[in-house]
Amino acid sequence: MGYQSGFQPKLFYHRINLEQRVPQNHILRKVEKRIDFDFIYAEVKNSYGDKGNVSVPPPVILKMMLLLIFYNVRSERELINTIPLRLDWLWFLGYDLDDEIPNHSVLSKARARWGVSAFKTFFERIVWQCVEAGLVDGNKLFVDTSLIDADASTNSVVDTQSLKRHLNKNYSRLEERLDDLKDHKTTPANSRYVSTTDPDASVTRHSIGSSKLRYKTHRAVDPKHEVITATQITAGSVDDGDLLKEMIDIHENNTQTDVDTVVADSRYGKIDNFLACHDLGVNAHIPSLEKTQRGSGRQKGIFPKDAFTYDHENDTFTCPASQVLRMHHYNKKRKTYEYRASSKVCAQCLLREKCTRAKDGRTLKRHARQDDLDSMLKCANSRQAKRDLITRRHLSERSFAQSKQYGYKRARWRRLWRVKIQDFLIAALQNIQILISNSKSKAQSQKNALAGHLRPSSKRHALSIWPISCLKTIWRNMDTLASLGALAFIWTESSMRKHPVSGFGQQPVQADLIGISAGFDNHKEDWGGLLATEDYCSIGTMVCQAARACGGGCFAILEGGYNHDVLGHNVAALIDGLSS
Ligand code: SF4
Image (tube, rainbow, N blue to C red):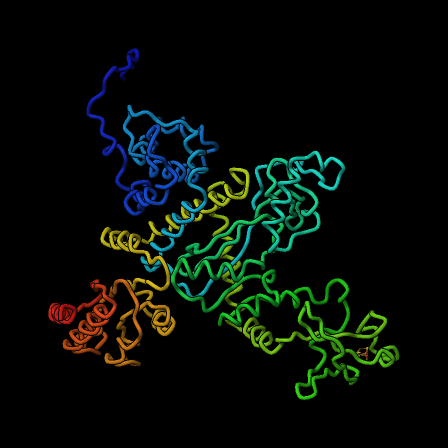
C-alpha cells in the first residue's frame, strides 16, 4: 500500500499538452471540427473601432456564449471562473493553461455591440450546413410555440392606468412595446400592465397554470432530422397563429426550398392563415380553429353550420327546418356575407331551441373566399393531415423538450433582443447536435464547410450543390428553382425516365456557380441501368455551356457509382464534357 507524501505544488510543469488531454471523441472537438466560428470576424467588423484596447477575438466570445448555453452555466461570472478549471473548455477556446481569461463583462459588452443580427447569421449558417448535409427535406414544415418565463417577477408588474403612471418612467417603455406589437393582437391586460423589470415580457397564462411574465418562442422544425429551420421570439401574449406566414418565409429563406405543406395545431387554424397558405400554394394540415371551438360557449347545443345546405346557384342556405336563409349583409371588416331566415319564421320554428338563442333568428356567415377556404379545409381533414398532426405532437414537443436541457424554461437575460439572442444560440446548438450526430465523414464536413462559405446571399444568386437526398425534392420544384434563378442538374433513375438528357439545360439560368452532384449509378451497367457513357459527356457539356452563359464556373462532386469497371470511364466522360 502506498502513502501519499505531503503535496508540494510544482512551480513549473512540462509535458502538459492540451491537445493530448482532450479525448479525440470529445463533443467540443466535433463542434470545433465542423463549425466555422471565424465568420464572426467579418460579421462584427464594423462594431469595433481602430483605436483603443485590442478586443478579445470575436470567435472566442462566440464560443464562450455557446459554452454558456451548452453546459447551461448559471451565470457568465461562473463560466469565466470555471474556464481555467476545465481543460476541454480551454482547448475549445484556444487558451493555454497560463493564458489570462477575459473578464466576464466582455460577454455582455459583445452582445450589446454585435446586436441580434450576428447571432441570427450564426443560426442561419448552421441551418444551411444542415441543408447542405442533406439533413433537411424542406417541403414539410411543423410549426409550434412554447412559452418561456421571463427573468422578472410578477411583483414588478404595474398598472399604467393608475395615477402614478405619469410619474412612471416605465410608461414610455410600455408605449414603445405597444408600438412593436401593433401588428399583433394582444390581450387587454397587456395593454394596461407592464413589468418594470422587463417591459418586453407580457403577463401570460399557460393552460391551467398561473399568469406569469413570459415570452413566446415560435419554431419551425423540418421533419427529416428535426432541424430547426426558423425561430422567432415575441412577447408571450402574441397569438400563435399571427406568425405562420412569417415562419414559412423564414424557413424558405434559410433553406432555399419551397414549402409544400405546413403542419400546426388548431391555434393556427384561422381563416387568414388558411387563405395565406392558399395564396402561397401551401397545403395547410391545420385543424380549423372554428371547428375546434364549435359546440362550446354560446354555440353549445345548437346546430352546427354543417347542418345547413348551401345552394351555389341561388346563393342561399337551407336550414334543418327546410327554410331558406338569404344574404342580407356584408361585413367589410370580416369579409363575410351574413345569411338569415325571416325572424318571424324562426320565432315560430319548432327547432328554434336547437338552432339559435338570438331574438332575430339564426344567422350564418360565409366568407367572401369561402370556396378557397373549403378547398383548404378539405385538405386539412385528409388522412395525411391527420397522420401529420400525430407526428407534430411528438416532433414539436421533442424539440422544445431538448431546448429545456439548455435552460430554456426561463429567459437568461432581460428584454426582447437579449431573449432573441438566447433563442438563436439554443436553436443553433440543437442543430449542431443534429449535424454532428449525422455527419458521416471528414470529407462530408469539409464539403459542408465549403457550402457554409458559399451560402447564397439571395434567391437570385442561388448556388446549386445538392446532396442526393435532396434530389427528388429539387426535381419536384425544378420550375420554381429555375424561375428563382437557381439551377440544379440532376440525374436520378426516376427523373431520367421521365425526362431525357436533352431536356436539361433549357431552363433560364442565373447562378454564380453551378455545382452538380454527379451520381454515376444510373449507368446501364450499374444498378440504375439507364445512361450510356456518352450521356455523361453530354450532361457535362450542357453544364459547361450553362455556366459560361452565366459568366460563372462549374464543378462536380462524385456522388455515386458502384460498378468500378465503368465508373472511371464515366467520370472521364463527364470531365471531358465539363471542360469542353
Ligand atoms: S330557427 Fe330558423 S333557421 Fe333555425 S331551423 Fe328554425 S327556421 Fe331554420
